[in-house]
Length: 316
Image (cartoon, rainbow, N blue to C red):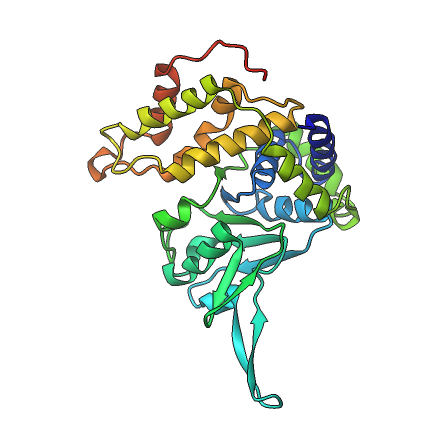
């Protein structure tokens, strides 16, 4: 496993994104981890925090195609995936590909579309394909979804179904900006938008090869057991209506592998698990209606504190 290759290229991409995004090193690392793990990411935050800029900067950094869908109540599934159109000249139907056929897809304010439209992403995010009129169409080999939602304004929104939430590898927030970061952003944007001059630092084939390297990162048996015990502890909470799915647990493993490689290691440590466990698991947990005062983050933290951290040598 070539951890140095992944780490060097990840740093190039990260540094390039930081030319546009100020003071969000942790968020950039996690969105890169989701990309390299072959997953997707949900960003929940108020408008104007840089969610769209982050997605665009990522796409421009890897020389990938970028498309944005503004989710609204009148959006239809075909507006996302595409539809078959009758050609009068040939007398046949031809499939017009929708915006989902791209490298980086920004699903902006995804919770403003109806559940029927939201479901149009289920197959795309999980199987990297679209099925229409009995035909299956493969998406680009590198396909990454960045969805956003506003947690404050709930009028005219639809809660994301559990099946869709479970397909997001991570859920992150852009967080608050400090005074120093605000000053730096003003200085950077005062004359022009830096994203307009952003140039690629690698191509999509490089990212695809990095994704292949991620799967070779060593996960010691004790770390695998650590992840499994944490998952069981969370799922057994009496405050939750449902536990962690097997897909979610495997996603945590894959994201941990990505985090390790981004940091130049070819093996996963318990600290990698702790670093992303909240982001991978929290949005998948639903407390009972009478347990709304219980935070899913507290449940995760309690599990991390309760399960003994393995101390073996994690190197292969």
